[in-house]
Image 1: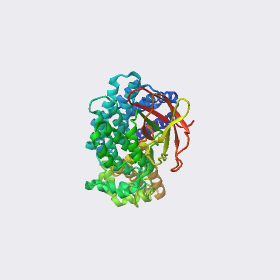
Image 2: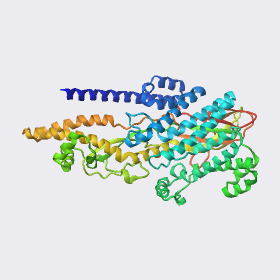
Image 3: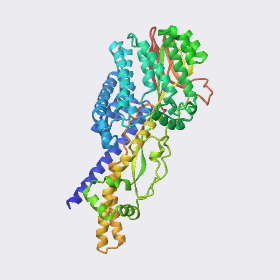
Image 4: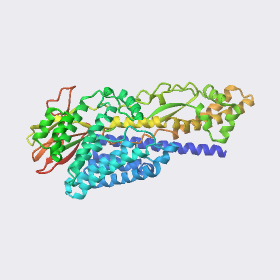
Length: 556
């Protein structure tokens, strides 16, 4: 009776936790929809009334989302407060808990704390730096400008620590947005030698585009083949073959932008080296002409769309390989008494535990060998978080209109970071790293349940109850336990849902005044003739360079 009560209490707890998780998921979906159409007041109300606020395990996610809404509502002080709190938590979780959790494989489990994926922890720095700079534009307080610069330095340190402490080799070991946005912030920081630092950051960004950029479909038409080559090359300490880097128009747009930035900064701080840089870079002649005739004073940063949501993707794992790891004494005794082969055959024939997903995960783009399943024995199913469907980012033209509505400038708007594709790669790396150990952990739980079912079956079989009754009772015992396991082992699909899918940037030369910023998409290689969507206004001052952030929001 006591055991029955315990089981009933456990099922009630699991039911309650599942109901809370489902409620929060629905609330976050409504919040995301309000944010996506630019209704930030409604988004904030939905967020404040959501279960996320009460969930102590999701404190980091709470601060990230609150910071996003505050930033979108131009409340920079509140945004700074939340992103500072987020980064303090990231430092605490990363340095004191994350490495320890890796060995126990509790990272990102739905029952554990939210640590954030590496790209989410990375972009908390971007948002804090951006908030500091936005407040500087309003207050002209130099401390805010230095706060923006200091955050860039902390961002760079984050990647240094990531490389040192990663439990597996990651492709995401640096970031284009860090280098390019960091370069822009250093340009305007007004600290001696920061112009030289900015120049080096732009050079670093070009190197990243030329090598790591090939990982992404945005820049490389052969990115799948390139990733396989990249993984093999890194192990040998070599660079991947350039033959597998089939450059896209997005690649060319960003390369032109970086050539412009490198040459413009070289002209400003290392004029004696300008001719050599032109010779080394071999840029388009239009880029060289532009650098020689104008100096950019306006930077437009465009945040586009929302990152695709995480989903729980099912995987199979054979139970046979996990048997030796079972440490439950009762289960070990049952397995020892009947033998390994009996356990696997019983699981397949009596409990119907054949593999359900023997094909490879179709969306995977690398490391297939670790997750391509050919399980022909008894198998369990478990989930890991992934992103499968990443919408295509379109090539876009930016238009600048003066106060009379006349277009005074238009050009391609380069993509600096495609966060949807980045997130997919990071999460797939995580799946590859965690598949075997996570599968073993879940399989052990199932083996304990199977052992209990075998015990029920053997007991009834010995009373001549008949195979059907014995099998039915065993099945009932296992099914009840497996439902509890499934509830505890759901993939953790919590994520920073208001992170943009893409970040774009360009630099222009504009006379003082008020302008409208608009965009339109290309049709293939054909540039749009006129703007299709007005994003907002910017005010250009009479001196210095300024950064302006706008959003492309979905239509209601």
